[in-house]
Length: 239
Length: 232
Image (cartoon, rainbow over all chains, first blue to last red; front, side, top):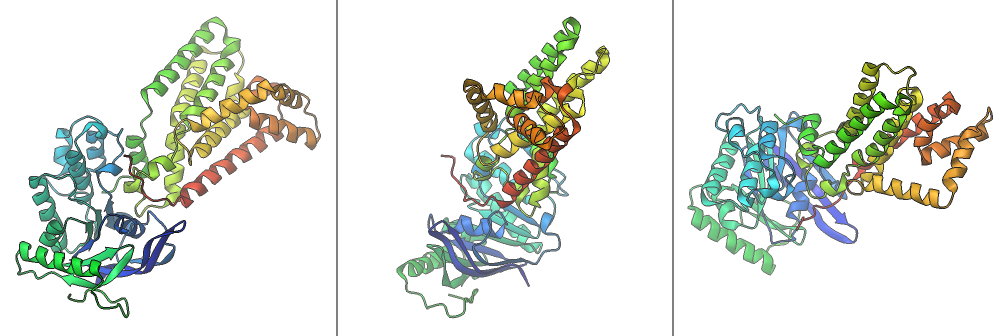
C-alpha cells in the first residue's frame, strides 16, 4: 500500500518549470531513491511533497494517520538555523522513545551555534533529529549523505533500512549513486524536472556494487534518451 | 515527538544580545525616572515602543528560503505557526513593557502612566503588529529602520507637526477622529504623549487596525512560496 503518492505534479518558478508533470508513489516499507543531476528538480519535488511549496499543478496524497507527526523532512545541514545551539536543538527533538539517540546524546552535544560546527556534524545532528523523533511513517530526505564521514554514512544507511523494516516509507534524493544503491529498493530518475519513464527495481540479492553499476547504466541510458516513451505515467517497472 | 511551534521558535529565535542589553538599559532608565522624575515615566515606555519597532521586526521570508523553519512547517498548520511566530517576535518588547509596568506598580506612582491605559495598550499592540508584518518579507530590523526613516522624513518636512496638530484638534466629528487616527498610525508615540486628548474611538480604531495588520501578516506567512536558497 502506498504511503505517499504524487499525481501529475508540476512546480513553476516564474517562467522556469522546475518539476514537470511528475507522477510517482512510495509504498510503506520501501526506500525509494530519486536520482538526478544538480538542478534536476529533486529538492523542489521533495519540498512540494513535504508541503513546503505549493504545486503549480497536480496533487499530493499522504496515506498516513496523522500528517502532523507522521511526516519528517530534512533538507540538509544548510537548512539548520545557524544561530541555534546544537544542544538546545537536540533537546528540542528529544522525547524519542529510542535509546542511544538525541535524548542521551543531547547532553553531549556541544553547546555552540550550528554555524561554527563542521558540515558533517551539522548534517548528522540534523538527520538524527529527524530520524530519532517519534514514529513517523514517511521520511523525505534530500541529499542525506552529503558531508557525512564513512562511519556516519554507514549509520545512516542502517537507520534507513531500520525505518523501512519497521514499515515506514523513505524517499531519498541524491546524486550519490553508490549510497543509493546500498539502501534503495527502487530508484527513479529525474532529469530537467521530468521523471524518466523507467524505474530500476533493485535486486535485494545483488551486491551493492552490482546494484550501483545497474543504476549507473540506467542513468546513462536515461540521460542519453534511450528509454521507452512513457505511456501512462506508470512507475516501479523493472528497468 | 515533533516540537511544538512555541518550543521551536523559542530555540531558533532567541533574541540577540544587543536587544537584551537595550531592554535592560531602558528598564534602568525607567527605574531612574521613577526615583527622580516619576511624572516622566512615559518617556521610558516611549523608548520601549521604539525598541519594539526593532525587536518585533524579526523577518520571516529570509529564514524560510534558507530552510530554517522547515522542521516546523512540514505538515504544520501555517496559521497557528504564524500566530506563534508573532507571539515569540513581540515577546522581548512585551517583557520589557510588563517589567516596566511592574516597576511602576512597585514604586506606587501617584498617577497612572499613560502607557498603562487602553491607549498605551493599543499603541503597543499596533507597533508590535506593524513591525512584525512589515518585516516578514524582509529581514530582521527592516521594519524598525523603515519606520524611523519615515518619522525622520515626516519631521524633516514638518508633516509630523501637522499630524500632531490634527490629533490635538480632535473633536466629536468623525472626520477629525479619522485624521487623528492617521496621525497615530504614522507616529504611535503621539498616543502616549497626548493620551489625555484621545478618546475611545481613536483607541478602538487603532486596535482594529492592529488586529487587521496581524491578520495580513498571518496571510503573508500562509502564502509564502519560494524556492530554497543556498546561503553560500
